[in-house]
Amino acid sequence: MDYQLYATCPDELTGLLAKEITALGGTDVHTAYRVVYFSGSQELFYKAHLHLRLASRIGRILKEIPAQSPTIIFDKAKKIRFDQLFPPKLPISINVVASNDQAKIENHLIGSKLREAINDCFQHHLKTAPNQSSRDAVIGVNGYYHNKRLMVSLDTSFESLHKRGFRIEGHPAPLKETLAAALLAVCEYDGSIPFFDPMAGSGTIAIEAAMIAISRPPLMLRKNGGFGFEYLHDFDPQLWQMIRDQARAAEHPAQVEIYASDIEPEFIKLARKTAANAQLENMIRFEAKDFFKTEKPAERGLLIANIPYGVRLGDKEVSPEFLRALGDHLKNHFKGWRCGIL
Image (cartoon, one colour):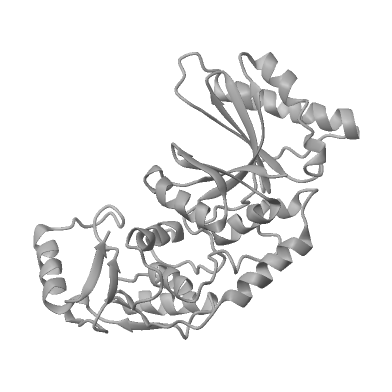
């Protein structure tokens, strides 16, 4: 039986995420505001957590119920067999999002009724109360209210999927890994040509490019127990191990070079440590160097730069003079390269 699933992302990326899900084998793929809905087997469900580069969170839809009033929400939600989904001691959180319906019920009322329904279910079937402490929650029970209907789902990501499992803290304004992956997707980077980030910061974009170049899934280094679905009653550890083994076997040596530089030596030290933590230290050529003193490292390739000024660091604005100099340097010294600037 196929699961009804969803993956969230910034609204501008839903089209790209939909393509990623389709390529992975998802069916009935369609987009909405900041979410992509799709269907798939348990295997596809597990693979989505491991392989999707652009998704922020992944969820499994349980049921859509009438929601004309708080009483109806409680009556319908308590019939969902939450006790057959996860153990009572598992910490869970209740999260509600509502569309801008004029007649909508307040989020806190929906959340309260969901909480009561889950408690009623466990008390009725197991004679025990569930652990509804949102602190250290492993599973999220989500409700999406729209047009007097409530979609009830499980958020099975545990931590946000931008947390790949190898970042080392220390950069004042690190780029989210999912945004780095989005930049590469927009530029259609597939690992077949050299890549260069001349303003690398902590190395996030270069590391994401390196993983693409060796066909490594982005969440490959999350430890066991790092996803919420691993705590569900129907978790299949053999299937999950098979999926991870297949992904590991599909990795291959990179056919191109990945380059990363930054004017700040401390950032390059941090980037090297992070790359080592990601088991990619021998794949990326790091160098502390001023971008305006760099030349193209190969005849052709893709350059992506996240300019370290303006809102991201909060202390400088991007001046027209800087942008003009940037454009001139790219035009004069990176002929044959495609360039993307954030």
